[in-house]
Amino acid sequence: MKILSFLTLSCFLLFNCTSPKKKASSGVIEITDGWVRPTKAGKMSAAYFKLKNETATTDTLLRISSDVTSTTQIHESFETDDGLMGMREQKFVALPKGETIAFKQGGLHVMIIQPDLDLVEGDSVTLTLQFSSSKDLEISLPIKASGN
Amino acid sequence: MKQLLILFFPLVVLINCQSGPEVIDDLSDTSFKLLNQDSVTVTFPDDYQGKYIVMGFIYTNCPDICPLITQNLIKIQRELGYPEDVQFLGVTFDPERDTPSVLADYKEVFKLDENFDFLTGTSETISAFMDSVRVRSQVSLSTITSEGKEIYFMNHSDKIMVLDPKSRVIIEYGGSMPQVPNLIIEDFQSLK
Image 1 (cartoon, rainbow over the protein chains, first blue to last red):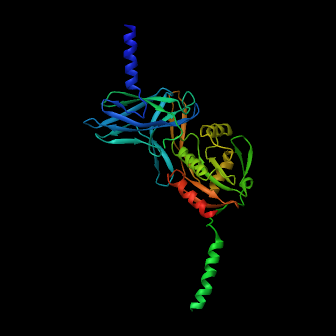
Image 2: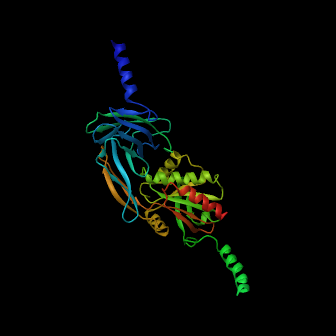
Image 3: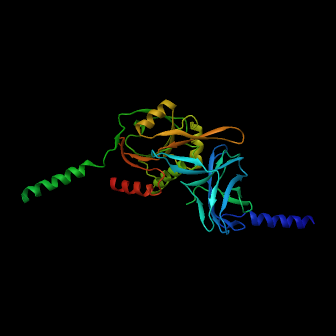
């Protein structure tokens, strides 16, 4: 029985915690091209990926949590009216059906605020995304210097 | 008239050839005592005279735009072949949080070489320095972490500039723009 439970759990983790080179999906919400910026513990990092809603209706990304910090937020970089670059928090992100929303440098991004440990190239960070309709999606993103 | 034109034309060409790149600002008369990531005092721009300077402006609590500016500086240095006569600088406009040791960590994370320094200073000096290079910043947004700590973020100018060996600003672009490395490399090729 124990072996069966172990095998079941392993299969569950394998399917739910995928590398971003592969696709991670929650039903029909799909995530690709994810990565996380390296940083030191207690500083600031960001996560980037593409989110595709292949469901039949508009869904909404409500919040994101991470295994490396207790504080994550969704922010968007923008240019102010007087020509400065700034960021504003997004409380949610609408995901129209059939569309891909890109979290990318200079635009939407996930703030990983004051991580508990150094985020080192080659390691990975787990994010859990919560939606208004689709089930939670757990993804494992590689830490690397740049998404290029 | 034709003879006059023939005589006059080479003179115009000669004057234009000698004029060099347009000078946006002359910083040779300024002097700022700053600290690099190793806590070594740097006198800007005197300590760099005789070198080109490629300089961006950042704060290390910025997770998106400032790393883009830093990445662009890195690409320019790499594409130019890590030239010894070009000094790369990242100057913080958030000196209260960006102490030398914080900048040393930032430099380590980006794996930068010795010809790439990050500079900070006293709040007064940094404020005067940013005025001289026309870089603006202001606290714009703060958030409370789950531990109850307040963190602020800043709106800021987005700029990379190039100074010639006489400490004159000769090139300026938006620092985080993806096309900036190629533009600056082309400019360098026409300068040298």
